[in-house]
Length: 298
Image (tube, rainbow, N blue to C red; front, side, top):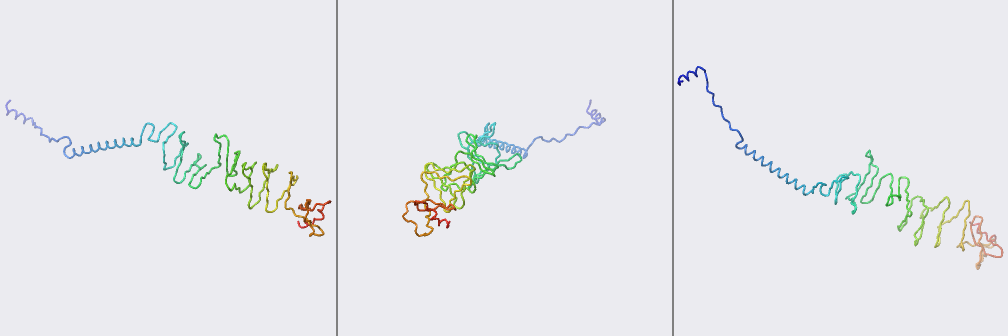
């Protein structure tokens, strides 16, 4: 086919040649590429720094499978070694030390231990402060080492001590504001026992009797004013080898008060109807009646 025929055939078919489209480059070029590389490099540096900090924290805090440093996680609780400081309240069921060391609780102000019930209400409190130790509870109890015997208990109504011996070693002794109930008051073997009420009355009562005895020494009862021995249903018995009544008044004669015997060596003891005791010179017969003027002054 000639060229002219091809051209005519093409024109008759109305064929057109496709035009060439614009070509665009694919990818990042220029400043965009540089920014992408910069962000990738920054991310890599951040990951390296984080990894280094994580390794440093693990090394410093001494992390391990059992716990962190002095803090060890056990199946039955948490174990702390050394000195531990708590800035906020600590709620635990039990605190105990190792078998070969002491448990020390310290604070700059005070140490307070609280016990609460299921409703959150305070049932007991122990406060150790710089000036005093205070315990607030319904009942305070002290038991023996094995816990089998109660030694001391105190509540709002009474204080009970069940020890075999209660010893007071103070120089001024023990001061009781009210009554004291005890089966025995005894001093040490080499010391004196003194019961004193400086400004009030000292009373000793017992339903079956009160016994005051001195096994190896004298027994002294002194009073500034009157000393009264009274028995409502029984008798007063003075049983001793020698009974001395010192400083008894000497009776005077009824007829002549100024003629009392001054050189008399033996006297007889007389008793007035009021119970007052006086002395009268001993003669062949009783002189109590003759010297009974002293009974008028009693």
